Amino acid sequence: MKIRHILLLLIFALSFSLSNAQAPPPVRDTVLHVGICGGVDTTWACPYFEEGVQYRWEPLNVPPLQDFIGHEVGISAENLTEGIISYEYYMNRTYVDEFGNFIGAFTDTIIFDVYPQPDAYVPITNFSLCPGDTGKLYYDVISAGTYLFANPTSSTFLDTSNSPLLNLFPTEQTFYELYFTNPGGCLRGPFNIQANVGAPPSVLESNLPPVICNTSDVIKLKNYVNPTTGTFSGQGVVADTVFFPNLSGLGIHPIEYTIVYQNCAFTIVDTITVIEPGNITMNPLPNFCLNDPRLELTVGNPSGGIYSGSGVSNGNFTPLDAGLGPHEITYSVEFDEFCVAEVSQVVTVIPIPAKPTITVEPEGTSVICDNQEVTLTSSQAGSYFWQPTLANTQSTTVIGPGQYYVQVANAAGCGNNSDTLEFQFGESPEIISLEALIYSNGFNTSSYSAQDGQIDLEVSGGVLPYSYLWSNGATQEDIIDLAAGTYSVVVSDFAGCSTNGEIVLAGPDTIVTPPFPGEGKPFGLPNAFTPNGDGYNDFYVISGLNGNLLNNTFRVWDISRRLVFEAINYDNTWDGRDLNGNRLPADTYFAVFESKTLDITERTFINLRYE
Image (cartoon, rainbow, N blue to C red; front, side, top):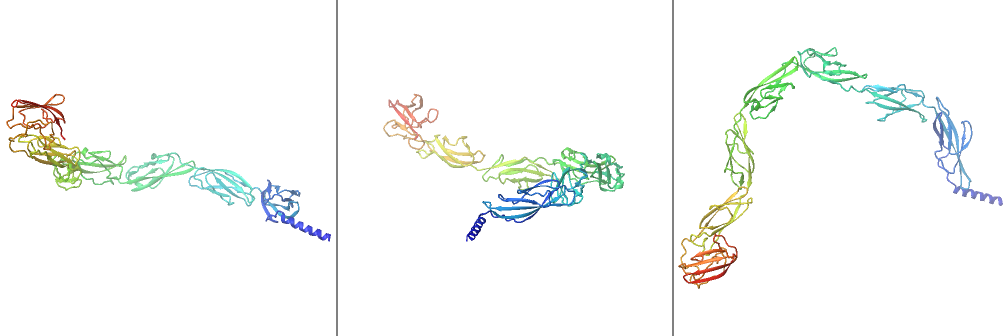
C-alpha cells in the first residue's frame, strides 16, 4: 500500500510540474546550414535564444572535439583555396521548470559550410573612352561560383554575371567600386576603377564661306577653321584640305571637319552653297509716297547682299531722303573677292497733297450741345477718308463726341492727314424761370418813364458755372433798374453750351396825374415802409400832400447822422435808396419834412424794412 501511494504522489507532482513549466519553443530538432568564410574567426548565435534554457554544443567533425555550454559558438574556419567544407555540431536545448525539474530536451543539427575567399583580379583600374564609346572592363575570377557588382558614384550599376567582361557606359568621368562575393557572404574588394571620357577642345569652330560662285578659285578650307590640325570631307573636297567649286556642282554641300584631340575624334559640319554668278533676283518694289515710312529692304535673293541707291542707308529705303521722282535701287551679292553679282530696279517717289485743314460749322465749336449738328469740311479735294469712319465726301457731319481727322489722297493713292479735332458732348442749361417784378399799379415799373423794373432769372442743368449776357449789356443773373421794354438773355455753361430767353417789361403808357399818393388824407409822416417790390407799401408816402407839389424839402439821415436822402418838392417817390441810387440797409432812420407853404417842420423816425 505504501509503494502505490508513493507512485501516485510522484505522478501527481510530475504532472503538476509539467503543467506549470515553461512551454518548449515551436522549433524542435532543426537542421540549419550557415555559410561562413574560410580563414575568418566567426561567432554564431542561436537565432531562437531564450532565457533559462540550457544550451550544450557537441562538435562532430571539428577538431578539437570539445563540448561547451552557451547559446553562442565561436568558430575558426580554415582558409580554403577551393571547394567547400562543412563543420557539423549538435546543439542540445534542455528545458527545466522553476524548481529545476527536467521538462524536455531537443537536439538541433547546425552545419557550418565554409567557403573559400573570392579570388579575382582586375588588371586595369584606369581607362579612357571617347564620347559615345562603351567601356569594356576585363577581370579574372579564379574561385568558382563567384560574381561581381559595381557601384558608380553617381548611379547604381549591378552585374551578377560571372563573365570576364563588364560593359560600362559613362558619359563623363566616373569612379566605380567593384566587389567580388559568393554565397557564403565572403567579399573581396573594393577595386577602384576610374573611367575618363574625352572632351572636345575648348575651341572647335568652322566659318566656311556660306555662298560662293561655281567660277571661283579653290578655297583653302583650313583658313576658315580653328584649330587647323583636322581634316575635311565632303563633295568637292580634294586632299582633305581644298574645296573645288567647279567639281562640287551647284547646290548646298555639307563639309565635315574632323579633329583628333586627346586620342578622340570630334566632328563638326558646315555648309557651302555653290551658285552661278548671275543667279540672284530681286522681288518687285512698289512706288512710294513722299511721306511713307522707312522701309527695310528684304527683297534680294539670296539674302546677305548689299542695297544701294538714292535714299538707301543701312539696308533701308527712306522716300523723303530720296526725294521726288524715279530712283534706281541696286542689290549686289559678293560671294567672294572674285565673285559679285547684282540686279537693279527703279522705284518712283510720288508727291503728297497739301495738308488739309478742317472748317467747323458752327465756327469754333468744340462741344456738341444736345442734338446740335456740327459739319466738318476738308479744304483739299481728292479722295476722303474721315476718321472715325464717316461719309467719304468733302463735308461730313459729326456723329458724336471723340477725335476726328481727315486724310485726303491724290490719284496715286498718296495721302496727307489733317490735324485732329476733338469734340465733347455737352448738355445745354435750361431756364427754369424768367420773371419780372409787378408793382401795385399792375405794371413792371412804378410809373411812366421810371427805371425801377427788376427781372429774376433761374437756370439749371449744364456744367457750372454759368455766364450771362443780357441785351442791355448786363452780365449778372438778375438785373434791376430797368425801364419798360423787351429784354433777352443768353445763358452759357462752362462747357460752352447755351440757351436763350426773352421777357417784356410793361410800364404805364402815360404820366401819372393827381391825385398823388396820400392825396385827400390828413397830413402825416408814416414811421415805417417796406420797399421790397411786392407792390404794397413800396414807397414812403406822406399823406396830405397836394398835386401842386408843395414847396417843401424832405431829408433823411442814418443813425450816424449822415444824410442819405434829400428831395425838393417831394412827391412820395422815395423807395429806400440813397443819394447814389443804392438800396439802404434795413435800419431805423431820422427824417425831417419842411413846407414853406404850410410853414411847418415835421420830424419822425422811420423804420425801413424789406420783410
